[in-house]
Amino acid sequence: MTRSRGRRRWLRRLLVLPVALVLLSVLQVAALRFVDPPVSMVMVEHRLRAWVEGDGDFRLRYQWRDLGQISTSLPLAAIAAEDQRFAEHRGFDLEAIEKAREQHARGGRLRGASTISQQTAKNVFLWSGRSWVRKGLEAWYTVLMELMWPKQRILEMYVNVAEFGPGIYGAQAAAQAFFGKDADALTAAEAARLAAVLPSPRRYSASNPGPYVQRRTGQIQRQMRQIGGESYLEKL
Image (cartoon, rainbow, N blue to C red; front, side, top):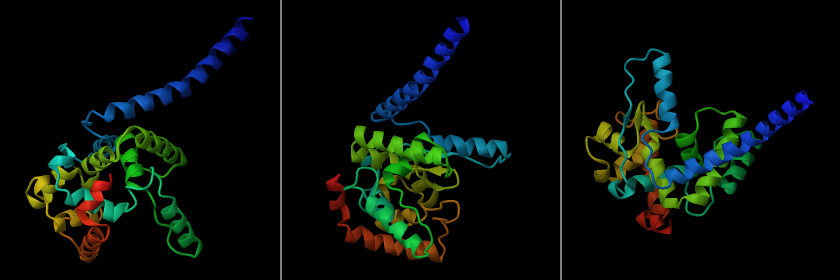
């Protein structure tokens, strides 16, 4: 009898655990709708990795700036470079996913189709990597964010926590590190150059742009005009 009661107790605990985790994630997203995060999980991950590897030169640079304190060119450049359907989708760009699948089926390189919402979910709440567990959690947090945050908040969070270089996170730190100015003074060309390194900020440099970054910067500037310039941001 005692053993049976013990099994039931453990079963109840196992059932309560996922419910508690769901509630915790909802509370996390609800809180960050109004509270600006002091750090993101990716920042914590990179700091711990540097400590484990004995990288004494690692320095984390991050200063939050509200969207109104950031040049409109940067969020526009990020959208043009990473997610041109940001204003239209609800977290997942099914058209981009299908195009990526078709390209891969034809023998092309498998490219990512992550939206700004998905990238924000990963950067703020999760860790790097490609495991199915991490991707599943990313999808869950993306759904919560799209339900509980306006698009402007998602975009604001993205440009504040995105990594633009080793240890350099967000618009303000990037503007100071690469251009010696505050984020609200970034020009369209400077914003496009920052967006050009977003796919791989530890491989490409905004301060010393190579041929790829220079070419990509020009493409992003053209895409910024093609999607409507600053009028695009009025859709959000």
